[in-house]
Image (cartoon, rainbow, N blue to C red; front, side, top):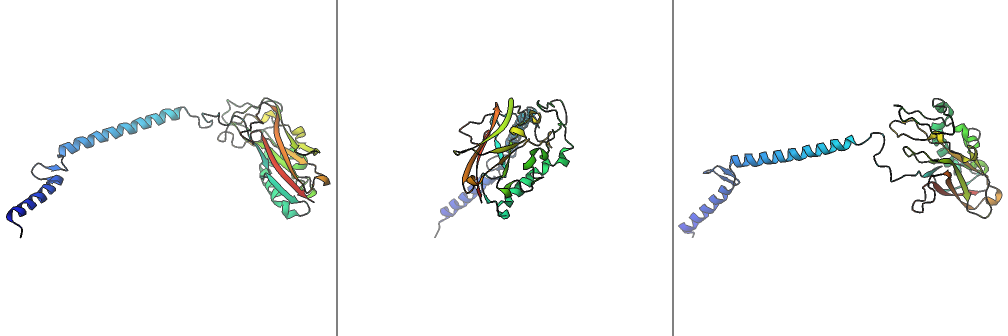
Length: 277
């Protein structure tokens, strides 16, 4: 049986535990008076408001240094990569079987929709041979590039882009880089890695990329811009059929980099093609 002293000690412990949460004699809650709680809450309110203000001020100053249309730092990709259409680096098809090359034809036709002559008529007929500078113009104009300039690879006279006759066309373009102005006279040159060279046709003539399509001013203010294209028609013969051919295309004739071993697509692209007879 518990003694009177044990009961008194138990009652005292319960009372001490309750007083640690709220002490009715001193008015303390969790060991602090209302005034103490008010002061510490006021301190943290001022402290976090100061931090929020410093963060907002820092963001505002940083945003003042940015341009909505031009990235602040553009040194990661100083030179453009080369891109191929159809969007495939390994192509194989039977020239006598339309479903086998239909995907390539469809890809090319879809890609060239923006280059239709009817759409390009609304763009500027720029003088060739020099940059089309528009630094002070609020709205940037676009130089005209008609798909008819691609001749036999335009898909207009030959809707199969040469795939049905075993002489396929591929389209090449450079990636967009804001402010790029290539020096020299850039053009595309393709070679096949085999003993006997393969004849090729380039459209426009000699695979030239006219400087009037540069510079590019960015997606926001140069919304309708289209890259100039170079079409390459591979004039394959019977000796070239049933073989996997590796074709490498490079941007030549300018200061654009095309031999960086760390990036195989910088100024060049390699694709493989196999035509089955």
